Image (cartoon, rainbow, N blue to C red; front, side, top):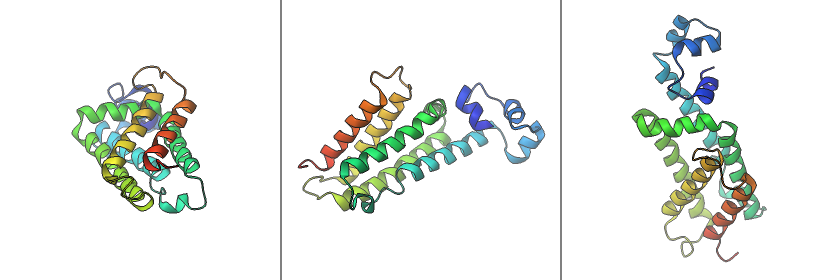
Length: 184
């Protein structure tokens, strides 16, 4: 219930009475499980970001590239990321906004980013020679940032997107493939 409300109205517009009502429980019952709306918000942020990691990064290992075209694998991963962000655009925007003003939400966001960059660094190290990518960690950070900003842009976080999702996905796929495999 809280996910639905935060996703449709944002953090500030939702109170514990609305969450309890949406969940079909009393406010007292809500307080048996959570101290306040901030606590449930953090739990939703953790679960949502953990799901994003599982869906996009966790299974992105060298084995995913074996017997498959690199372009196809990159494109598929970007499509999953975009689908995740675009399935809950207002909730994702709320997380982004709250991470700028709430240290605990910022820490959850930072932890997700760090584990994602670490996983991408391991992947880049495993599949790309050092003479092509001399600093896998910095490259992972730039690629992760590019993908996330593109997804947020498509979700309307910065106003109406200037291009459609398919064009953005193709451009991002091409960008990543050229960065990691310039001789392809």
